[in-house]
Length: 415
Image (cartoon, rainbow, N blue to C red; front, side):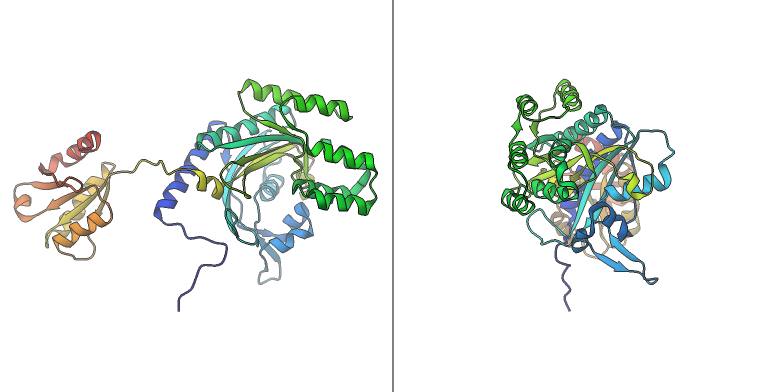
């Protein structure tokens, strides 16, 4: 019986995994250059953790199950909540700020489509313990530098949820649904919701006006004329980003949809992904009190790792592959030669199928090996091997003690 992989999941073959590991390596190196250190949390948590953070509505998107003691658990749908749960439980007394980064797979029961899967990966950072505009500047600059390093064509948009929250404050707890609709940019549903609540025309007009405030710094000047809000924090942040030569757009309609965001927010949109164009999102938030800790400011972001991998070209430099090919009876010596080659930093493969010389060479070509090291009886007696360039067919006799030096020279010259 043939068993297919579950819907919304993927198998990654070697070439794709090589690209993903290369992207991951680049992101790790940049995060660590900023002083961020890697953390990891369990793949499943108590489902209550995510209900507290995102509300009961998230249940429909989660993979929820009960263990043998009838505890309700869930595969993690995202990673910010687990990181803050870990912070409250184990890190709250550490010197602030804390700089963490992570990469991990997450799970959501959604309708699979291009660039949206039921199992997906996030790469993110959390800076915990500072509410300064400098913390936001660092995190935004870090996200910007990461995406630039991948040579992705993207647009950075920066906003402040405090603006919309201040306008919607007369709605009380009903404001959160409005924020979610703003986050989805569903203006028709938002208008219907306002009609249902009998929201006054002035408030409604302000909300829709803010949703359209996009552009450069002139946006702040326009917003100041229309809104009673202190823009000092946002202006300081933008001055810092200007000094760092970060390209951005102001977009005061960014809502991020969740009530734990409290200040500056940002999103990055790729230009080649269609509807699923958001590749990074984050901002200032406060979650520690929700999980039983003391009030602690934080800011961070998550990169949609799968989406950026779709956009990145595989530029990983391929290590030369050397096939060690032997006549019957020289299997042990072939393993010794392969070990010598590997210890010198090369990739070496040996036959494990008991094939003859012709079939070994055919397989070497099939797997796109660059060179074949051929071990035969006459060469062995002379303390030599044959080295064959599988592209050009050129062949050399090489002393065994000189083999790794010779291969290094071939690699350097590209012969």
